[in-house]
Length: 179
Length: 155
Image (cartoon, rainbow over all chains, first blue to last red; front, side, top):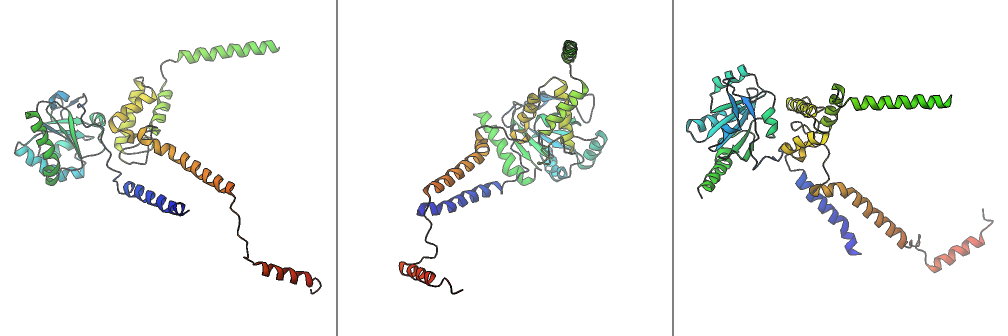
C-alpha cells in the first residue's frame, strides 16, 4: 500500500531526470558522423587560380586543419586572427574551403583580412561541404597525416579553443605516430 | 454488346501496361515528384525543425539539388536518403528510424497505454467497497427509520 503511494513520486522523479538531460542540451550542436573516417574524394578548383584543381590527395602527408569559411560568414572574422597567427608561426598546415561564395568577394575578403591558407577549395555549390557533413561556418576539421578526420570543431577557433581543444588533439596524434 | 465492352477494356488495359513499361527512364515530372517526396523526409541541418523541402536556407537548397542529382543518377528514395544520413547521421531524417537507441521512443507510448490499461482493469476487478456514505451508526439508522415512518402526513 505504502509502496504504491510512492509510485507517482517515483514517476515524477524519472520525468525530472529525463527533462534535466533533454532540456539542457544544445540542439544546434549535431554530433558528427565523420570522426575517424577518410576524407571523401573530391575534385574542385582552387579559389585563387581556377585552373588548379584541389583533391583529397592534397590533404595528406601532415596534420592539416581544414577550415570552412566564407566572406559572408561573420563568425569567421572572429577566428581569423587565430588562423593568421597559426600560419605565421608555421604551427600547422591550414587548408580552406571557401563555401557558397563569390570568387571576387572571397579574394577581396582575404586581401583585407589576410590569407592563412596553403590551399583553398572553392565550393560554391556545397559539393564537398555536404560530403563532410558541414552544418554551418565556421567549422574546422583536424586531419591526421593519412587524411583521416580526427576531430571537428563547430564554431570559431578562439585562442582558448586552440589551446584547450585543438592543440591537445594534434599533440595526441603526433605522439601516437611516434610510438 | 457486353463481350465487346470487355474486349475494349482488355485492349485499353494492355495499352496502359505497354505505356508504363515503355517509360523506363524517369520523366522530369517523376524526378520532380521523387525529389519532393525525399526532400520532405530530410531535415534541414541549419533550421532544425523544417524539412529541406520547406526551408529557404542555402544549405537546404544545395541539399535539394543533391537529392535531385542522386535521383537522376538512378538512386532509389532510400539510397538518396542514406547518402545524407551517412554524412549527417540519423539527425537528418525527419522521422527517427526504429533501432536500438530509439526503441524506447517508439515502444514507450504503447507500454504506457498498456500499463494504464492493466492498472485500470485491476482496480475495476478488485471492486473496492465504497464506504458507507454518511457514516451512520446503527442507532442513527434506527432513528432515521423511526422518524421517516411516523411522519408520512406531516407535509
